[in-house]
Length: 228
Image: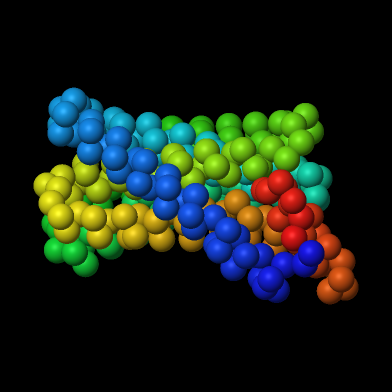
């Protein structure tokens, strides 16, 4: 069965939004427990955010590197795309989009861009993830299916921790609006990074629409138990 849309990005958004929403709700519930019942976020909030962010960087670079190494087998292309894509999309999903959402809701947010303020550790995790993806793609079938799920979950925690740590710490009923805000913040960049961007690069040399569709279908199958 073929894709319901000609654009794999739209297909994957439709498929992944429920999982992303579930991940956001789970992360929000755990963050709420940590803050109000365990009282752990006052002293460790920034550390937890940075942990989730750099872990997210690792998996975000791993997934496109794994797909590119499988379909193009050009090491430097996969490494370059993974580094650039993960740097941009992780910053968008974990920092920029939650920051803008909180500003629109009236919170006084601080902007803390880790890749700029802690570039060394960010680059280490990005490159480590890309190299790991390149190596593991030769050993593990459908590797990106598992790394994509981890990517979304880590991004949900990172975005939530960013809000709590850098300005939206006073939770109230209006905070429930953050659920759809974070869901969109996580969903769009993560799907772009893990599927849309690598799909674009692996299909660059294909002129035939049928070949392009078959390749897109194959990449789609990497993330799911079936092909569309």
